[in-house]
Image (cartoon, rainbow, N blue to C red; front, side, top):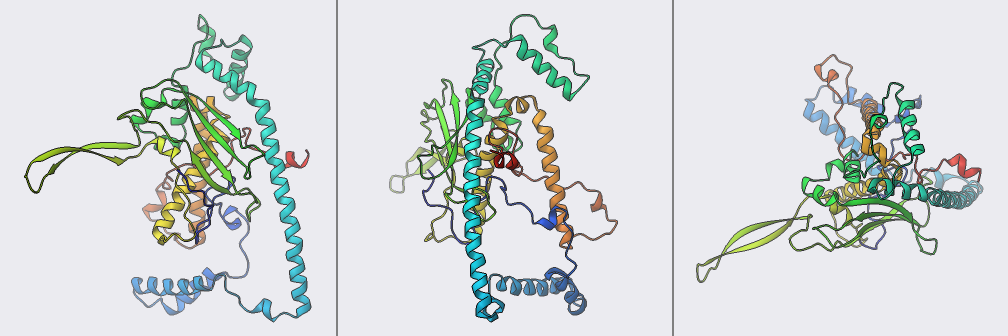
Length: 417
C-alpha cells in the first residue's frame, strides 16, 4: 500500500494533473528564441575556440566539465539582490506579498473549477448508468439512441453505412467491452498481460467519483466493478488519487499520493506473482525437496499497489530516485487518462476511434522532443541516412492533455461561473 508521506524528497517533483509528465519550456512550444546568446550558445562558442583541436572524447569531457560547473551555480545567489539599496529590497518584499495574494486567488480558482467538475459529473451520472445498462444488456437501446449514434458516425465519415440498419432483433450486450476499451489505450495496452485478460473479461464498469469536501485533501477515485470471477473476491477495486491542499508553482493541483485497494486473491490466482518450483537439498541428509516460490511479475493489477513516495529521511540514491519518479509519473498519468479520456469516451476506445487522437498526440510529443534536441544542437543539418528515420516511439502513456470529459474544465467556463 502507498505511504502516507507527501512527495517531497530531493529533486523529485510530483507531476500535476495537467502536465504529467512535465511540459516543455515555452521555447520548445514555438515561441521566438532570445536575441541574447544563452548559456548553451556561449558554450558552443567557447568550445569552438578551446576544444576544436581536441579529440572527440576530450571535447565531450571538457564540455561536461563546463556544464557541471554551470549546474553547480543553479540556485546560488549572484549577489545582485544583496547589492540593491534597502528601499529597493523593501519593494521586492512587497512584490512577494502581492504574489501571496495572487497565489491565494489561484488556489481558490482551482478549487472552484474542481467543484464545477463535480457538478457536471453529477449531471452525467444518468448517462453513465444508461451506458452501463446497454453494455450489460440489462436494458435495450432505444431507436432514438441508435439513430443518434448512426448520425454521429456519419458526421465523422459521410460514407459511413451502419450495419445496425440491416440487423434484425433487439440490441444485445457487448462482450468484453471494458477489456477492449482498456486495451485500446496506448499506455494500458502495454501493462495488460494475457493472464490479466482472463480477469478483465469480468470487468463490468469503470466509474469516476470525487473525494468529499469533508476530507482534508481533494482528489478523485476510479472504481472498477467486477462480476463473479475465479481470481479474486472483491466486487469493486478502487484507486484513489489525492492532490496536495495547495496548488503548485504552475498554478495547477499537484498529485500528493495514490491509494489502491487490497486485492483478496483466491488461492493460486494472484496475477501479480509468478510461481516457480525449485529443488532444495538438505546439507545434512542430502535429501531433496520441491519448494514453491513466488516472485513479482508484470500485471495490470499492480496498478492497485501504487509506488509510495519516499520519506525525507529515507536514504535513496539518484538512480533509484529517478526510477521511482518515472513510476510515479506513469501511475499518475494512467489515473489521469482514465479520468479524462477512457471513462468519458469509453465507446471511442472500444471502437478504436480514440486511438487516432492518441496517436496524433504522441506524434506531436515526438516532434516536440525532436525540436528540443535541435535547439540543443544535438542534430546537424547533414544529409545522413538518419534524417530519413522516423522518430522513436515514446513508450508508456501519452502526456495528459484532457479528453473532454467531466474532468476537463475550460478555464473560461470557470471564470464565467
